[in-house]
Length: 269
Image (tube, rainbow, N blue to C red; front, side, top):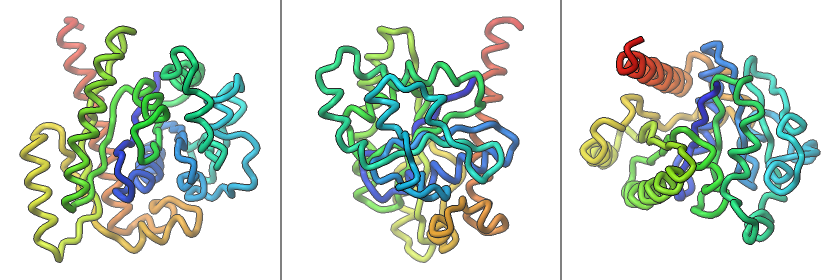
């Protein structure tokens, strides 16, 4: 059954969508079947994989606001093993539509269940907010990747995101569901600026066992690839950015293998 991973941080500009696109692509390059769900009304993940906004007939708005099955919204991308549920500007209306619905935080969780068997990983690209969409994403997810830009204000926002995750963890226990932090991902490191390394040290001190070894450096290839509707792996496979996201994918795959081995040891298998 597919593992659901949210890419979340309420601060904008920390590399959530870049990570969602390129982690999804890197996992797909590892022969994993991947579904990327674009939960941001700006639809940057959708555009970044070569799908024009005006060509989208159904989107994550329909997924959350109507009874449309997720199977009717999934689109293939030009990247092997990678599908997407696209977004649209209509998603901006979703807070008002879902506000008074009972159990509104479980809508995405329930929709995803019908396709979890078809994918190895389902990646959720979350908007920069702490509203109902984030609640849905975290309820639907098994784990969270928190991108943190190597600068002070992004570091300061990390505490708020962890508090949100803790609150959702408490709520999910009522449904016998769990949520863990997959890892904190340090992004946009400018290796010419010593302050970025100070942020790295502070984050690793705060999350010694939950900070990815992989660090995503600033890269012109990562900036340019979405302009061509491609992941950085498809745009410039041998670039630094592509290498770093391949390393991140491998870390996540290895983490899952290690978790399964621990479970097997506990069960005596």
